[in-house]
Each structure stands twice: as structure tokens, then as C-alpha cells.
Image (cartoon, rainbow, N blue to C red; front, side, top):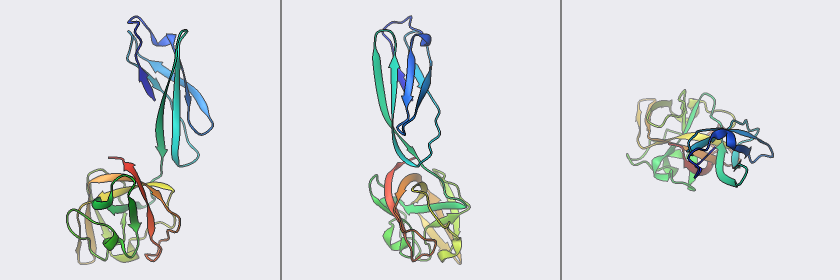
Length: 200
């Protein structure tokens, strides 16, 4: 959760105490490791009840000083049975994303050329991977889930092609998307959101 150094080269981890405020109304002690003035590392573990952004504050103290370090933690969920996809041309942080719908091919740009109109945005049976490939069926027959999490990881593709009834694509990144209300598994109920950041 944090790292720090001490000017005293004889300092030991036992001389410090750490508290982690997890940003959801709860806090816990952090464990500190390291010696010889550092670096020292503060570690902790926490389970969140909700998805989204949490501001985490770590406080480190000894008998003379108190310092704090603040960072952002995003909690998100994966989709059951597969992963949604966005094009790499619109995968910049804070950009709008369409990850499902009848207009997927016209609202997503890919550096490898246009996507086939038959692709609606869901790659069944594929967990999020930074680099790899996936296969889907045409239209809504890829069986997307009935609901989507408020924050979810999606594949970022640069190339999608159609061979008969099969659609093949690549994965060049994984993006975290904050999803908008209104999604439905029918291609007429588009899934949209905002790219929060690139996970990898």
C-alpha cells in the first residue's frame, strides 16, 4: 500500500506503526517489512462490498514523525461466460465506449481496419487477457449476460474478421470501463460506458 525510508540506517520495521484507511468507512493496521533504513513496505488486505473508486490513505508513524500516502483503488468485476470488447481506436482514458449493441461495428474503430457488422461486442468463453485471441458468433447469438457490473474489464481489439458464421478477434489490451445504465442482452439495448484506465 505504501513504501518509505528512514534517515536512520539502523531503523527497523518494529519501530513503526501503520494504519490503512480503505476509503469505504473502514480501516485496519498495516504490516510493515524492511530494515536498515528501508525501503520499508506497508501491506494490507481488504474486501470491498461495492465496485468503483476508493481513496486509500496509509498513515505511518514512529515516536517522532507521522506521514501519509494516498492512492486510488478501483474495484471491478468480470463478466460471467465471456468478455465484452471495444476497439483500440477509442480506448483512451476518459473516452466514451460502446461495448455491446447493433451498432458496435460503426461506433468502434480498430487500427487493423473496420469490424464486420455482424459482431455485436461479446466474446463468449474468453476471460480478459492482455494479449491473445478470441472467437464469437454473429449477432446476438453470442449469448451475452443479462446484466453488467458497474465497473468491468473489457478486451481491447485491433483486428476483427468474419469467416462464415465465425468471428475472430485479437486482444491487445484490457480496459476498465465504468458502465452506463440501459444495457440489455438484446443488440437493441446498447452497452455503453467510459474508459477509466488501461489495466494492461
